[in-house]
Amino acid sequence: MPDNLTTATATSRAVPQRPPPPGVKDIADDLDKHINDMVEATLQAILTEVPIYRVRGDEVAADTRRAASYVYASFIETLRSGHPPNEAVAHSLANVGADRAAQGIPLGDLLQAFRIWARSAGATLHKVAKANNHDREAALWVAEAIMYWVDVISNLAAHDYTREQARMLRENEEERRSFLLDLLYGELAGETALERAENIGWEPAIEHSVAVVGTSECSHLHSTIEEDVAQRFPRSFVTTIRGEIVILRPSPTPDDYEDLVKSITRLTMEVDLCVGITRPRLGFTGVRQGYLEAIEALAIARSSKTTIVDYEEAVLDRILRKEPALLAELVEHTIAPLIEYDKTRSTDLVRTLETYFLLGQSPTRTAKILHTHPQTIRYRLNRIKEITSLSLEDPEDSLHLILGLRGKDILPHVTIPENKTRPYNF
Image (tube, rainbow, N blue to C red):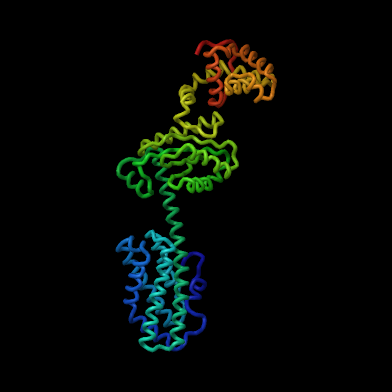
């Protein structure tokens, strides 16, 4: 029997609750004589009216014939005994649902097939009762039993159908995750890889973009986020690797990821959510490379406190990250003295410098954003020049300061140099 169902509860209404009148067993015997005709009529009606059964081919048709025969035989035996089917019979009836789920028959079409069975049984009952002049009360009792019976077997089959479908989904999800891990770690190649890709619906011949979503302290919501992403991008492949959500989908637009971030933010209520994306890549090797690029883009997004970073557009950050030792040296000789000055004197020189460059080196606009007087901004800029020995009027010096500010965000820690004098040229 299916889980959480007992024979008593599942089949208690398999026949009318009042005792069968005389003549029901005679009707059952006559129906038994026509069982082969009923099975074939039911099968042909199902194949005609429910196209998916026909599309699935001869194997499903043969299985449907066997199921129809068993349903009729069980029903006739129930008419003869006057009692609901036992546990073994109920289990076999329920298995029809699991079989159809495995064959890819939609649940609605399975239930339609049962209704066709009831209609065919009713038509044969009418024919047999009229031809053999059966008792009217007995015929009505059997007609009522047909309706009870189809309701019972529909519920049994639907229960096993949903249980089998859930099992297949779990199995498919495990295979999808395993495939994606092997894909992203570069462990897929050859015919086996193509076969696995086909089994889960992955198309290597189509370019796929990779996005890696980093969420802070919300691992308990990863499954919810994955479901939301899967609904938003129906053709996507989504999994979680090392606490980060990886999304692969065919050629998304930047707006897609803007919408994605808004959606996930609503789910997580996180303000530091970041996404690294890369351009579409082709094939197993291409997607693996795209994944590595998306991871780097995510790291850049985190360090620069940016929501979305496109790997292709983050050229400067990628260059700076190539030589961490040189980058640390650059930061030490440019921004580190300002960090130390702000720390010891509770000033705001670093933020002032960042805003100054962000607003096109305009003291007036910087003052407006920082809610202070332009003269105060000019004083701070002079102090920056004195502390770093770098001139904001000199393009090369300004470039060093800009790179130092960017490097400050990239490096996890800043080492304060002992020598605060002007560094050698970079």
